Length: 184
Image (cartoon, rainbow, N blue to C red):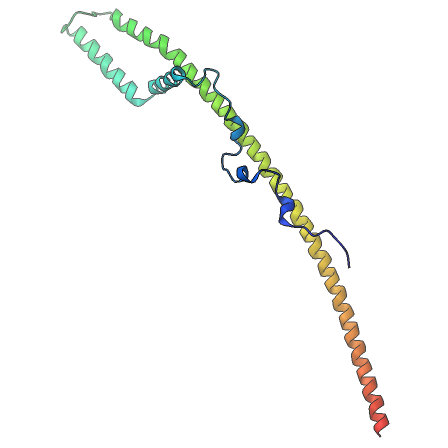
């Protein structure tokens, strides 16, 4: 018989500590210490919230209603605080644009940082999956080799058993023949 090393399931498991092995965010953990280039302080978080608000339908509809109301009351003559060509309204839009543009860029930069970290974590995850798949394939290959070897040994033992059975049968017939001759 062949003396091959017996494989067990631990051959295919990586050396990841057991408490982190099953955590579904385990590939994101190395990136938790990363903070945004603008920080995670109150201002950065509020600036990002405002920038996100500027792109919502609620903001766009509200601004459209306010501007339409502004133009109607000033053009119709209900009030005269900003007559045509609406310089005060233009100033308000300029002020809004001056603050909105940097806030939107800040939000995009922070989102890009998060996307980059998540992409790296996903890449690590894909690499770990590929490695685990390779390990499983190698493990299955070794098991297949062992099964083939066991089948060969089984065939050999079956042949030996068959030949011994035939030999025993032949000897039994021979002994039986000798015993019958001796009795007669």
